[in-house]
Amino acid sequence: MDLRINSTPNPLTSTQLARRVTAPQPGTQEVGFSSAFKNALQSVSAAQDRAGDLQREVQMENPRVSIEETMVAMQKAQVGFQATLHVRNRMVQAYTDIMNMQV
Image (cartoon, rainbow, N blue to C red; front, side, top):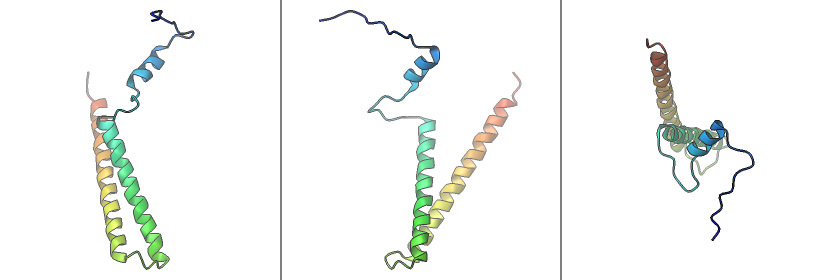
């Protein structure tokens, strides 16, 4: 058994060390506000993409796509986008409030 400690030829800077510590480990799931917000944005984007695809299929007169399904998908995408917009506005307002605080 080899117990020698190998030193790295180029020591890590504080920035590199911070990135290594905060980077998600493979096989672990991210938990926190940023990952939840990222997942929410991705789901809103996916809903908008689906609605756009269904609109194109209706315009091409695809018999397998109903207008009702398309309208529901469009409404879901619109509601998701509006909710995301409200969250963004609240975050900007909170940031502005914090920046305007007297220290």
